[in-house]
Image 1 (spheres, one colour):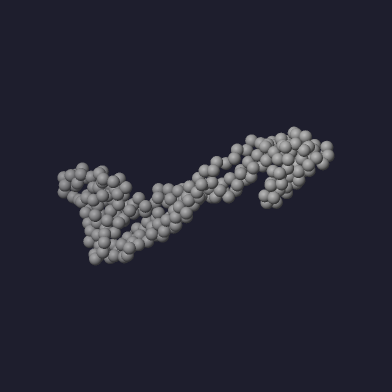
Image 2: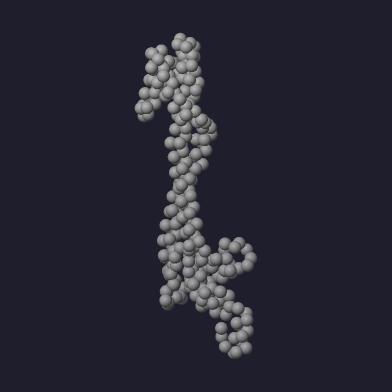
Length: 261
């Protein structure tokens, strides 16, 4: 039966998780940069206006310096208001009327509004000047998320390309070779106890008129079956079809019985 491979769980799971983390961090950074921090700045500006100007102005008598400063600050706030928050715009109008001395009712309404807005904005802390630049560290994770998704799709396609047919023909992303064109398999690094651990999942097929073809069982599930079949074909005394070393005891037992393993 022909042997095919799929993407190894250890590989695709790590890739997908990394992609999700990068995408979440990137979207989080954009949301903070575009929405959360600007809203916090707006809230801090409103809190400062209410505490430093409106509250002090309403607490002083008409015509006082504090009231004049508050009126000027309100005029600036009205000019800079984007008009997106109608309630805040109406509140500025009420504060302006009260500070201009337009009656006791206006003063009471302004005082009530001030108390409500201070409860909402009074404890707001202005974002640091470094908060927005810092969000770029998260935003820059976003392209890495798409990169890992692209890598997953690419490697999945490559995984489906590996095929060892019953007649010994090997198909890989690099090409197709018949059993006659496959000259050897390099098992030097396969399950080796020395050197880089990552390379002990790999073997190289030596093919005719081409570079050695890397077979990676870490990335591709069931690749060890292709490796084992080829290794057993070339070195049956050393390797089983499952790419495991033939045990010395089995060899000795076979020699004693005059048979083969």
